[in-house]
Length: 192
Image 1: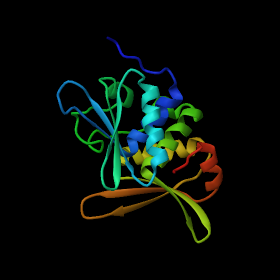
Image 2: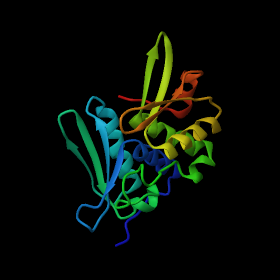
Image 3: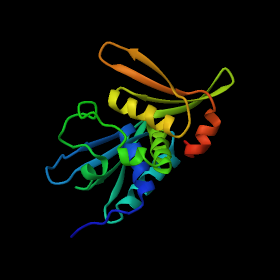
Image 4: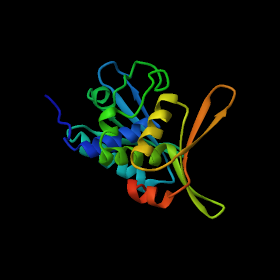
C-alpha cells in the first residue's frame, strides 16, 4: 500500500525545520526509516504540536511519543523520510551529510518562515538580555548555519553570528537582536 504524504508544503517546511534542529533519522530494523525529534519535557504543548504536525504530514503512519526523565522523543516510521528531509538514515550524522535548508524552502518567504519557526522551536531560544529581546539558533553544522543565515537575511533581518570552539566542535550561534519581536511575530514562533 502506498501511504499518503500531505501536499501542504508549509507543513513540510515546518517539519524539515524541526528535524534539522533536534531530529534524527535511523533505520533500526533495516525495513523502515524512523524520524525522532527530541523535545524538552517542560514544553508539553510543543511536543504535542510536533506529534500532531507529523501525523498531518503522514496521515497513514503511526506517530508515537516516548517519555524520558527530562525529555520526550516524538517518532514516526516511514520510508518517505529520506525523500522529505533530504538526508539518509545510514549516511552518518547530519554534520557529515552537510545538511542544510533545502533550496525550495529558501525560494519562498512563506516556507522560509515555517522552516525557521521549526528550527527556533528545536534548536533555538527566545530570551531577554539586559531588557532586550533576543532570538538564538545554535548549530554545530557549518552548512546548516550558513543556510540559516541566508534564510534569515532572505526575509529581511540581519543576524549576527558568533563562533565558539570547544575541544571537539565549532558551535555557530546565530542571533537576531535587532527587530527580534518583529522576527518572532513574522515566523509565528512559540514555545510552551
